[in-house]
Image 1 (cartoon, rainbow, N blue to C red):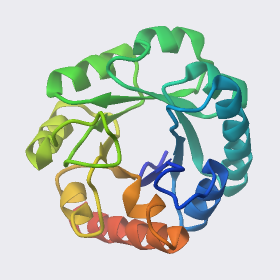
Image 2 (image 1 turned 90 degrees about the vertical axis):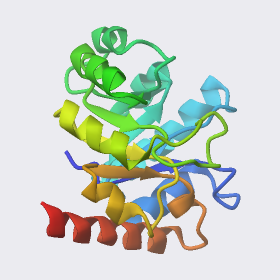
Image 3 (image 1 turned 180 degrees about the vertical axis):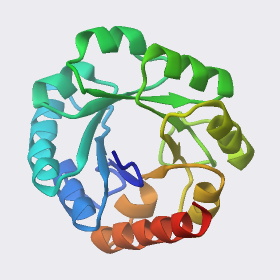
Image 4 (image 1 turned 60 degrees about the horizontal axis):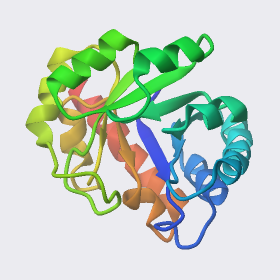
Length: 211
């Protein structure tokens, strides 16, 4: 399962485009994963957006993840859910989820990554890797040294999120990340498809050099 380019939808960053339009343009540029993230929408409206993205990602062969809301992810037939450290515990989500359902976890330390792995996470995401303005609650960046420490501590796929852009993505992959999750670097660009294509090419090139 590829996590190379993981795009998180954000209507506020995306120049007025809907979550579905953002997803459509991102997968056209080669996004491997689309995550629907919206803290403002009602459950009903979030499900409507999720159902539209499910069709887009299914047709494109991309993975579809819903942020936080396991209920919406299951109702929309998403491939998985992404949970923060204060969300539903991974082990409880695993009991509810069907076989093969992907559970990702945001972590900020080696101990949290080890706990997430033991609880049944399918991947972990260092959040935030660098300071970011795309998420108000992100906090300070943990840096490349923490990314490398997580790579040594767990064997799960490792995703870096927060403050990643074309200039630093090579360093992130070299530090051990299997993929990068982005908002502004793709969704915030005028040409979402082109930005996704460029970032994915940089990831592929760095992996070819280092792995």
